[in-house]
Length: 124
Image (cartoon, rainbow, N blue to C red):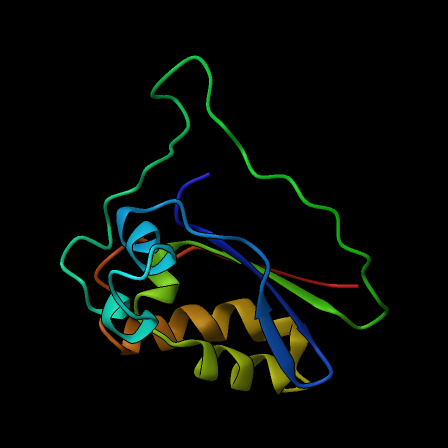
C-alpha cells in the first residue's frame, strides 16, 4: 500500500517486487507518461492507497521464493526519490551487507534527502 517499495537483489540483479500505488504509476501503467517522465513528475507524491484513511484498503499480496544470499530491501520514497535503481543495485552489490541500509541512507542524504528516509535490508 502506498509508494514505499520492496526490492530483491540477487546475483548482481535488482528487481522491484512491489508496485507503487500513486497517480504517476497509474499514468505510467496506462501509457500517458514514460518511466523516465515519472521520475520527475510534479505529482509523483500523490498516492492512491494509504493505511488509516478508510476502514478497508485494497492491498497487494505476493509470495516469492527466496534463495540463500538474496537481499530484500524495504524502503520509503525518501530513498527512491534520491537514488535511482542503478545506484541502489551498485550499493547492494558491495559485500559489506552489514552497513548496506546505513550507506543507502547516507547516499540519499548526499543527493538531497529532503524527505524521511527509511531502509531495511535483510539478507537470506
